[in-house]
Length: 367
Image (cartoon, rainbow, N blue to C red; front, side, top):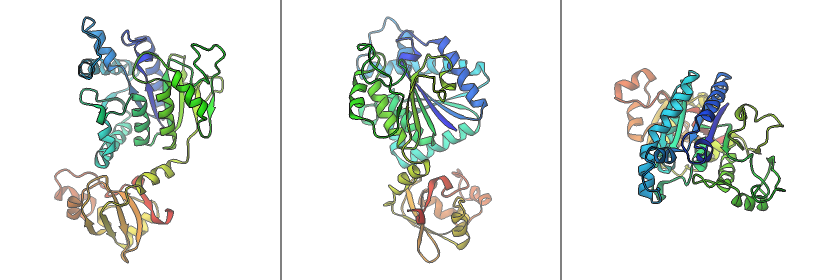
C-alpha cells in the first residue's frame, strides 16, 4: 500500500518552539515499521518556517511573504536534517522533494514528478515533501500543506492519506470551547454541511492550516480514491493502529476506485492534439494490459509534449485508447518503431522504455 503521511507545524514544532525531537523519533519508528511491512511511504512535513525562526530568535516575526520565504530558506535544510537523522536511526533513507502548484498543474512536470516518486519508492526511500516556500507566491501556492498532501496522494496513487494534527479528528463543534463536542468517527458519503461549518471553527493557532483545510484536503484526496484519516499526531503508535476501532480518528471513505480516478484524469486531457497509430501486435498487447512501447508505433501525428493526453489508433484508424505520453512528439517520431535497446542510440537522454505506461493508459472500450 502507498501511504502519504502529513504532519503539521503544531504537532512537529511543539507549538512553534522548534522540532519536537522525541515525537519525531516515535513517528520515524512507526514509518520504519510500516516500511518493513511492505508499505511505500511519502511524508509531507511542515515546519520549515518554524525551524528558521528557532535559528534566528532575535529576528522579527515573519509577517510578510518575503520574511516567511527567508525563514523557510533557513529552516528547510534544518528540517530535512532532523528527519534524515530520525529516519536514519532505523536504517531508512530520506529524500527531499520541494514542489509548487505549477509542478502538478503542468502535465509534463506532473509526469516527471510522478516518475521521480516512483523511483524513490522503488528504492525503499521515504520522500520528505514540502512546498517550495522560497519561490512560491499566491499564484503558484497550494495554499497549505494539507492541500499539498492531497495533491501528492493523487500524484503517487496513494491508497491512504493520514493527516496528523493536534486533535483526535473532526468534531461536530470546537472541543476547546464546547466540552460536549463529539468526535465524528467516519464520513462515508457526502460531508454534511453542518460538519463543514464545524470544521471552520476547529484548528490550532500554529501553521497555516486548521481543521477546515484538512477537511478540504480529505475531500480532494478521497475523490482520487484514497481513504483519509485525520488523527492526533502525538498519540502513541497512531500510524500503526489506525485500523483499530479503539483508536480515535475520523476516517473519510474513498469515493470511487483508483482506476476510475485515473481514468477521469486521463480522459480530461483528450483534446490534446496528438495521435499514435500502432501495429496489430501493439493492439493485442494493449488489450492484454501492457504498456505501449515505441517498437509498436507506426505513425506519430500532431504536436504534443510529454505528459499530454494522446489518442492511440489501430491500423484501421479506430481509436482504441487514450494515454499520457512519456515523450514529446519530436522525440517520439525519432524512436517510433525502435526496440528499447536502440532508443539510447537515437536520444541522448531517453525517458524510459515506454511511450505510454500501462498505468497512464485507458482503453477506449472502457470509456
